[in-house]
Image: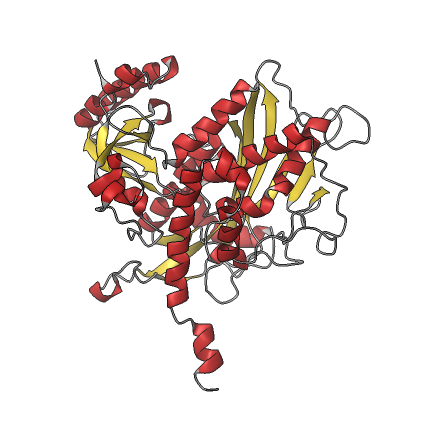
Amino acid sequence: MSFVERHGLWSAEQKEAASRLARIVEERGLEVVRLAWPDQHGILRGKTLIAGEAVASLQSGCSITTSLLAKDTSHRSVFPVFSSGGGFGMKEMEGAADALMVADPTTFRVLPWETATGWVLCDLYFNDGRPVPFATRNLYRGVIDKLAQRGFDFVAGLEVEFHLFRLEDEKMAPEDAGQPGNPPTVSLLSHGYQYLTEQRYDQMEPALEIIRRDVLALGLPLRSVEVEFGPSQCEFTFQPTKGLAPADNMVLFRSAVKQIARRHGYHATFMCRPKLPNVFASGWHLHQSLVSRTSGENAFMAKDKGEALSAFGKHYLAGLLEHARASTVFTTPTINGYKRYRSYSLAPDRAIWGRDNRGVMIRVLGGPGEAATRLENRIGEPAANPYLYMASQILSGLDGVDRKLDPGRSADAPYETKAVLLPKSLREAVFVLNDDAFFRETLGAAFVDYYVHIKNAEIERFQAEVSDWEQREYFELF
């Protein structure tokens, strides 16, 4: 009996998809299959197997070191993996021991930009069949499974902003290597500022066309391609999908865009605010709603005239506001991302909502009888781990429903209305999460401690560096 069979890891749909995967590998003569899993930062890691070995590993799993879960964003291990419990307090992860990547065959794709290459997303399990508790796709699946038990599916549409530059110098000299290495030198594809103008779009179209075609060939539900306000900035939006799909789509999209761009002489970055002259910050707006699993009806849709949301939707909205500060580490997990929270900038700076208002944190869209009624959370940065971002939304919203919280009135002047301010820095956000009883209960204290430890390691490295600001401020003066 295989590992998958012994532990009952696949549904009937996944078993059927595994048979289809094996058939496609043979029919299309694929040579390799990439087995990928999203790490704690939402970055894809994994192994590339010869096609026959990949098919053989579907039900047995493929080993991979658990030390990858100890990495911060510089890929440095910030846990003592060779000490007792590996720094995680778990014997199974001591000494950089292996876990198993088990493919989710429903995610299988053939990569359009690479020759004879398949790709499949995986989950991490210990050898006894238990999900690895720090693997965020596992965590998110547990959240949506509990939501399903309450009779709802999570539906999300993505609006993702990022920058696309021409690659001038890859910085591949040996002295450029490091943890992290020196970033590439780039130039603009457009000057920007002429927001949504056709001329600016046409300037970027040769590069955007390459990405657009491969993203569609992957089967991602692309809806629109737009130029954003800043130089070389663009936005891709996606049709709503439910459950695991929107988070899976996001990690694949980011990885695909970076790979496609690099192969054609471009550099794509989902960093929120690159340190380049005149460049604007990028955000990730998450459109979300809950739908009934029995009737398919949108639970946020109002039925009373003049109302923007149902009572259920209002309570869910209030939950998002209630837990906004503590969830910011999940929606904005980088030091750089907090440079975006500025007043009068089309980005939020406080936990507040408004009806079709782009200055608030939560923009409410819809009305009585409108099946597309939804909440647009504008808080996120495009570098966020989508599994943690979406899990934090569901948990927060349901707490508002359970406690029948009131979101208050719509804010017409979002940067002047009194409301709880969002954290001004990652350190402040980490302090809030560390002390937050709600997420310690819903995500588990062990996971919160784990994630706080990683984020603190990044912050400590940042604080140890002498910045350009410090050099300008003090070097001559003192």
